[in-house]
Image (tube, rainbow, N blue to C red; front, side, top):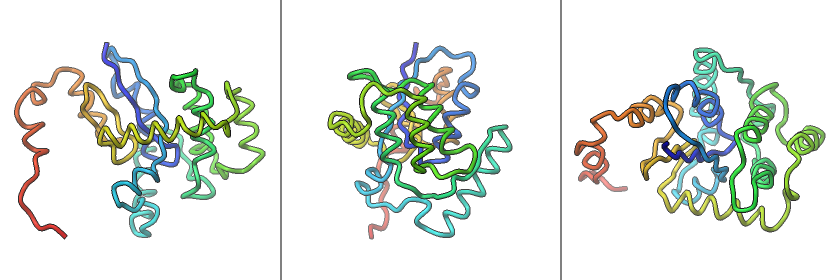
Length: 212
Protein backbone atom coordinates (compact mmCIF):
# COMPACT_ATOMS: atom_id res chain seq x y z
CA UNK A 1 0.00 0.00 0.00
CA UNK A 2 1.41 3.37 -1.01
CA UNK A 3 1.80 6.06 1.64
CA UNK A 4 0.78 9.55 0.46
CA UNK A 5 1.35 12.85 2.24
CA UNK A 6 -1.16 15.58 1.43
CA UNK A 7 0.43 18.94 2.25
CA UNK A 8 -2.22 21.68 2.35
CA UNK A 9 -3.50 24.94 3.77
CA UNK A 10 -7.29 25.52 3.93
CA UNK A 11 -6.76 29.00 2.47
CA UNK A 12 -6.21 27.38 -0.94
CA UNK A 13 -9.27 26.60 -3.09
CA UNK A 14 -7.14 24.20 -5.10
CA UNK A 15 -6.31 22.30 -1.90
CA UNK A 16 -10.04 22.02 -1.21
CA UNK A 17 -10.77 20.77 -4.72
CA UNK A 18 -7.93 18.25 -4.60
CA UNK A 19 -9.07 17.00 -1.19
CA UNK A 20 -12.61 16.46 -2.47
CA UNK A 21 -11.52 14.82 -5.73
CA UNK A 22 -8.73 12.61 -4.35
CA UNK A 23 -10.87 9.49 -3.68
CA UNK A 24 -12.34 9.59 -7.19
CA UNK A 25 -9.00 10.36 -8.86
CA UNK A 26 -7.35 7.37 -7.17
CA UNK A 27 -10.31 5.00 -7.29
CA UNK A 28 -9.26 1.35 -7.41
CA UNK A 29 -5.79 2.01 -6.01
CA UNK A 30 -4.47 0.94 -2.63
CA UNK A 31 -3.13 3.90 -0.68
CA UNK A 32 -3.09 5.61 2.71
CA UNK A 33 -3.04 9.39 3.14
CA UNK A 34 -1.46 11.47 5.87
CA UNK A 35 -2.93 14.97 5.89
CA UNK A 36 -0.32 17.60 6.81
CA UNK A 37 -1.56 21.16 7.42
CA UNK A 38 1.12 23.77 6.73
CA UNK A 39 1.26 27.55 6.44
CA UNK A 40 1.13 28.51 2.75
CA UNK A 41 2.36 32.02 3.59
CA UNK A 42 5.49 30.42 5.04
CA UNK A 43 6.17 28.71 1.71
CA UNK A 44 5.64 31.97 -0.18
CA UNK A 45 8.02 33.85 2.12
CA UNK A 46 10.70 31.18 1.84
CA UNK A 47 10.59 30.99 -1.96
CA UNK A 48 10.15 34.75 -2.46
CA UNK A 49 6.72 34.55 -4.08
CA UNK A 50 3.39 36.36 -3.85
CA UNK A 51 0.18 34.44 -3.37
CA UNK A 52 -2.32 34.31 -6.25
CA UNK A 53 -4.74 36.55 -4.35
CA UNK A 54 -2.05 39.22 -3.96
CA UNK A 55 -1.89 39.85 -7.73
CA UNK A 56 -5.25 41.24 -8.82
CA UNK A 57 -5.56 39.81 -12.35
CA UNK A 58 -4.31 36.45 -11.06
CA UNK A 59 -6.80 36.56 -8.17
CA UNK A 60 -9.68 37.18 -10.59
CA UNK A 61 -8.55 34.34 -12.84
CA UNK A 62 -7.99 31.97 -9.92
CA UNK A 63 -11.55 32.27 -8.66
CA UNK A 64 -13.05 32.00 -12.13
CA UNK A 65 -10.93 28.91 -12.68
CA UNK A 66 -11.73 27.17 -9.39
CA UNK A 67 -15.46 27.78 -9.76
CA UNK A 68 -15.35 26.34 -13.27
CA UNK A 69 -13.42 23.31 -12.00
CA UNK A 70 -15.88 22.87 -9.13
CA UNK A 71 -18.95 22.79 -11.38
CA UNK A 72 -17.16 20.52 -13.86
CA UNK A 73 -16.37 17.99 -11.14
CA UNK A 74 -19.61 18.37 -9.19
CA UNK A 75 -17.96 19.86 -6.09
CA UNK A 76 -19.83 22.41 -3.99
CA UNK A 77 -17.75 25.57 -3.66
CA UNK A 78 -18.51 29.07 -2.39
CA UNK A 79 -15.89 31.80 -2.13
CA UNK A 80 -15.57 32.83 1.54
CA UNK A 81 -16.66 36.33 2.53
CA UNK A 82 -13.03 37.36 3.03
CA UNK A 83 -10.14 36.06 0.97
CA UNK A 84 -7.26 36.02 1.52
CA UNK A 85 -7.66 35.58 5.27
CA UNK A 86 -5.35 34.53 8.08
CA UNK A 87 -5.62 30.70 8.27
CA UNK A 88 -3.55 30.27 11.45
CA UNK A 89 -6.56 29.62 13.71
CA UNK A 90 -7.77 26.85 11.41
CA UNK A 91 -4.31 25.35 10.92
CA UNK A 92 -3.69 25.25 14.66
CA UNK A 93 -7.13 23.78 15.25
CA UNK A 94 -6.35 20.98 12.80
CA UNK A 95 -3.03 20.34 14.48
CA UNK A 96 -4.76 20.30 17.86
CA UNK A 97 -7.06 17.54 16.59
CA UNK A 98 -4.14 15.28 15.72
CA UNK A 99 -2.99 12.58 18.12
CA UNK A 100 0.32 13.28 19.84
CA UNK A 101 3.02 13.09 17.20
CA UNK A 102 0.43 12.34 14.51
CA UNK A 103 -1.65 14.07 11.87
CA UNK A 104 -5.34 15.05 11.67
CA UNK A 105 -7.70 12.53 10.12
CA UNK A 106 -9.70 13.08 6.95
CA UNK A 107 -12.89 13.87 8.86
CA UNK A 108 -11.26 16.78 10.72
CA UNK A 109 -9.75 18.11 7.48
CA UNK A 110 -13.12 17.82 5.74
CA UNK A 111 -14.89 19.80 8.47
CA UNK A 112 -12.33 22.60 8.25
CA UNK A 113 -12.29 22.74 4.46
CA UNK A 114 -16.08 22.75 4.30
CA UNK A 115 -16.10 25.49 6.94
CA UNK A 116 -14.05 27.65 4.57
CA UNK A 117 -15.30 26.67 1.11
CA UNK A 118 -18.99 25.96 1.57
CA UNK A 119 -21.57 28.60 2.47
CA UNK A 120 -19.60 31.72 1.59
CA UNK A 121 -19.19 32.93 5.18
CA UNK A 122 -16.22 34.50 6.97
CA UNK A 123 -13.81 31.68 7.88
CA UNK A 124 -12.59 33.55 10.98
CA UNK A 125 -15.96 34.73 12.31
CA UNK A 126 -15.74 34.02 16.09
CA UNK A 127 -19.12 32.30 16.49
CA UNK A 128 -18.45 30.04 13.52
CA UNK A 129 -14.95 29.23 14.79
CA UNK A 130 -16.34 28.35 18.20
CA UNK A 131 -18.92 26.02 16.63
CA UNK A 132 -16.24 24.39 14.49
CA UNK A 133 -14.02 23.88 17.53
CA UNK A 134 -16.88 22.25 19.41
CA UNK A 135 -17.61 19.94 16.48
CA UNK A 136 -13.96 18.91 16.17
CA UNK A 137 -13.39 18.44 19.92
CA UNK A 138 -9.59 18.94 19.68
CA UNK A 139 -7.28 16.91 21.89
CA UNK A 140 -5.61 20.08 23.22
CA UNK A 141 -6.25 23.81 22.94
CA UNK A 142 -5.43 25.28 19.54
CA UNK A 143 -3.29 27.98 21.17
CA UNK A 144 -1.16 25.42 23.02
CA UNK A 145 2.55 26.09 22.57
CA UNK A 146 3.18 22.54 21.36
CA UNK A 147 0.48 22.90 18.72
CA UNK A 148 2.02 26.12 17.43
CA UNK A 149 5.46 24.51 17.31
CA UNK A 150 4.14 21.42 15.55
CA UNK A 151 2.68 23.60 12.79
CA UNK A 152 5.98 25.46 12.41
CA UNK A 153 7.84 22.14 12.28
CA UNK A 154 5.47 20.75 9.65
CA UNK A 155 5.96 23.81 7.45
CA UNK A 156 9.73 23.58 7.87
CA UNK A 157 9.62 19.88 6.97
CA UNK A 158 7.59 20.62 3.85
CA UNK A 159 10.14 23.24 2.78
CA UNK A 160 12.99 20.80 3.39
CA UNK A 161 11.27 18.34 1.05
CA UNK A 162 10.97 20.99 -1.67
CA UNK A 163 7.28 21.81 -1.27
CA UNK A 164 6.60 25.24 -2.77
CA UNK A 165 2.82 25.34 -3.06
CA UNK A 166 -0.41 23.74 -1.91
CA UNK A 167 -1.78 21.25 -2.40
CA UNK A 168 1.26 19.05 -2.85
CA UNK A 169 0.97 15.28 -2.65
CA UNK A 170 4.15 13.40 -1.85
CA UNK A 171 4.70 9.72 -2.56
CA UNK A 172 8.00 7.81 -2.73
CA UNK A 173 9.82 11.13 -2.39
CA UNK A 174 8.14 12.54 -5.52
CA UNK A 175 6.08 15.71 -5.34
CA UNK A 176 2.86 16.25 -7.30
CA UNK A 177 1.69 19.86 -7.07
CA UNK A 178 -1.81 21.14 -7.62
CA UNK A 179 -5.30 19.90 -8.37
CA UNK A 180 -4.42 19.35 -12.00
CA UNK A 181 -1.61 16.95 -11.01
CA UNK A 182 -4.09 14.33 -9.75
CA UNK A 183 -4.18 12.45 -13.10
CA UNK A 184 -0.36 12.42 -13.14
CA UNK A 185 -0.32 11.09 -9.57
CA UNK A 186 -2.83 8.39 -10.49
CA UNK A 187 -0.70 7.39 -13.49
CA UNK A 188 2.35 7.05 -11.26
CA UNK A 189 0.49 4.92 -8.75
CA UNK A 190 -0.79 2.71 -11.56
CA UNK A 191 2.77 2.04 -12.70
CA UNK A 192 3.03 4.27 -15.77
CA UNK A 193 6.36 3.36 -17.39
CA UNK A 194 7.22 7.03 -18.03
CA UNK A 195 8.14 7.45 -14.38
CA UNK A 196 10.75 4.66 -14.63
CA UNK A 197 12.47 6.32 -17.58
CA UNK A 198 14.94 9.22 -17.65
CA UNK A 199 12.39 12.01 -18.15
CA UNK A 200 11.46 12.59 -14.50
CA UNK A 201 15.01 13.49 -13.51
CA UNK A 202 16.17 14.89 -16.84
CA UNK A 203 13.35 17.40 -17.16
CA UNK A 204 13.94 18.66 -13.62
CA UNK A 205 17.59 19.45 -14.28
CA UNK A 206 18.53 23.14 -14.64
CA UNK A 207 18.62 24.42 -18.21
CA UNK A 208 20.80 27.37 -19.27
CA UNK A 209 18.78 30.54 -19.33
CA UNK A 210 18.52 34.15 -18.30
CA UNK A 211 18.88 34.84 -14.58
CA UNK A 212 17.29 37.98 -13.17
